Amino acid sequence: PHSKIGTETIQIGVGVGDKRQTFNVHKALLQKHTKFFDTSLASETGKNGFIFLNDEDPDVFRIIND
Image (cartoon, rainbow, N blue to C red; front, side, top):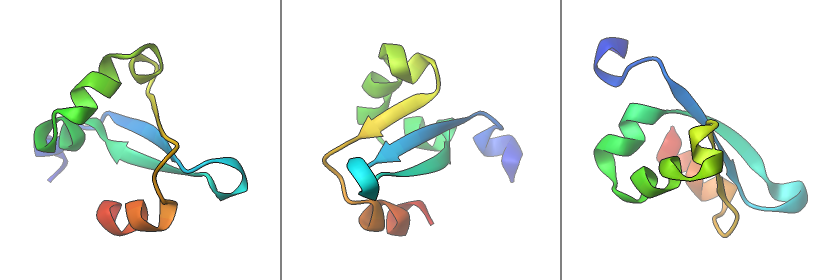
């Protein structure tokens, strides 16, 4: 299963302040399913393995990520 999605993961910080949660997500999955993450991963923080989704709800992201 991992051979198709690779082993490289990135950390996504979702939400702000005390509500921010960090998720580890396979990079290849994000790139395969949406162009938005291609742009985010090309940013300086994205190149370092981090993406921040400050305007998103961690509870909703957890549902999508699970």
